Amino acid sequence: MSITVKDVQHVAKLARLQLSPEEEATFTEQMNAILQYAEKLNELDTENVQPTTHVLQVSNVMRDDVVKESLSQEEALLNAPEDEEGHFKVPAVLE
Amino acid sequence: MSLFQYRLPEVHNMLHSKAVSVSELTESSLSAIAEHDSKVHAFLTLNEEGARATARVLDDKLASGAARGLLFGLPAGIKDNIVTKGLRTTCASQFLTNFQPIYDATVVSKLRQADAVTIGKLNMDEFAMGGSNENSSFGAVRNPWDLERVPGGSSGGSAAAVAAGEVFFTLGSDTGGSIRQPASYCGVVGLKPTYGLVSRYGLVAFASSLDQIGPITRTVEDSAYVLQAIAGYDAQDSTSAKVSIPDYLSSLTGDISGLRIAVPKEYIGEGVDASVRESVLSALSVLEGLGAVWEEVSLPHTEYAVAAYYLLSSSEASSNLARFDGVRYGVRVDEGGGLLDLYHNSRSQGFGPEVKRRIMLGTYALSSGYYDAYYLKAQKVRTLIKQDFDEVFKKYDVVIGPTAPTTAFKLGSQTEDPLTMYLNDILTIPVSLAGIPAISIPCGFAEGLPVGLQIIGKEFDESTVLRVAHAFEQHTEHHTARPQL
Image (cartoon, rainbow over all chains, first blue to last red; front, side, top):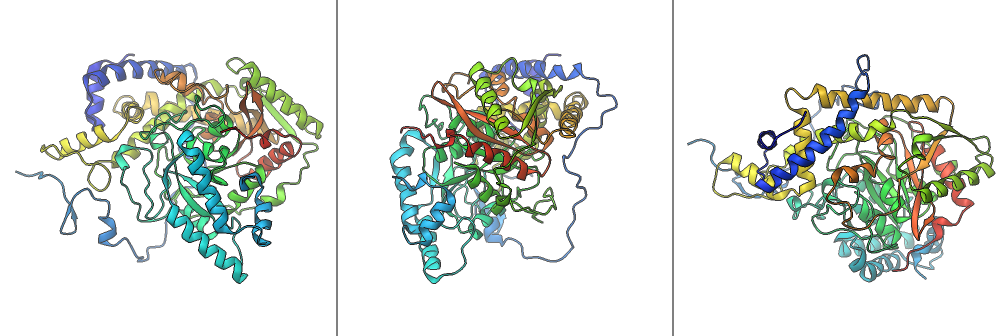
């Protein structure tokens, strides 16, 4: 299986990246090489193998539902590139 | 003579006997940085005033006779993907050039509790993606042993700062080998603990199922001290392990008689430089002389590790980096379009090429129709790799091999070929996939460049890993060599 510039453009859209034509060409070539290398995994029969989603035997970690102090509004907005009246500001999404 | 020639207990004795003060130690670190860092470029941000203030507080503590922490007065550097309250944290990315964290990572709080002095933040591959540190958007780190060569990645700054004697110890992070491989290239000690032993709270995530924080030091004993200070359960990290923490220092007995060592044939075969193989075999004979026995074994799925790793880590990276959208923090590029344009422009200008490449690869591997073929397949292969180690550990105490197939390569020599670059991590990646602990210690030199020995242990058996590494260090001189800067 090989991927085309069109595939790369589609993936870039999914990944919220804007690529230049040069980047599209380079990534098409490099992703093909890497994915071709990844085909190696198909040499292995993994039909009855369970996937490893976590190396430790931990699951469903919960904490007690108690009220704790959280970040102040000022702290939460400290690194915001733009904010207004205690909110993160973004371009208008509604006409 | 620099204070950095001394071992940790010696420095503590000097502090206790008032032969030196914490402020003097801090100044000595800052002057070493002033002297060497224009060449090495290990630091991205210095915390001069903060470090001096901490040093004064610690000197008062010493004078008052109050109890001292495990890392009392020691100048430390922190990889720049670990957040530090009020101290700029960039992940070596243009995206976070001015990011001021509003809280400390758990490991940073623990260093503070242990009375260490935070000198500054260390250079790295952008978002920890890379094996050479050439992907830092603030410029590469250079290897103190040869300034034309890479220090390894992604904790290249963390390893180079220790090798150059700029700080006493550093923290790095290891996803596919990012502590061990730079430690190997720079001739220092790098420990990747078992996944879950050290809290990842406050580590900017690259691949959450693989990332692990660990110490880079000059000796194994120092490594045990730092691990002791940072290990332990953290309720703020849902992947943190609830295990009891042993006394790592008491495991440094020097006794390894009867120890059973497995040497995977895949780790010393084709693709590994003859000089590296020779250093490792000679290290094994040192261990044999101390009463250990070693045998060749096979980890048959080793050759599949790199492919599985790049699919898994890139997939997790594409998901973790989705939060960088130019809204809540980091760079914002608003060219007057809508919200979607703001995301696209901010991400495209904020991320460097390696980060984009991995986001693209990960997004592709997770996309509809390809998930089973790539992501799920790689998770299954991960199981086979873990089973390889489980099998070997039924009969052996540790697995030993080289840390990297070669010594440090020249800057720029592999940047055009990502696949070749990825293959440099072939000996460290299987350990990361299995989540088990491993240390890299200096075991010789090839043409003047350090060679690293990798000692791999069972899950949560850092004590044995440290015991073997310490025994080797006690009977060799490699760790005492210093680069000429």
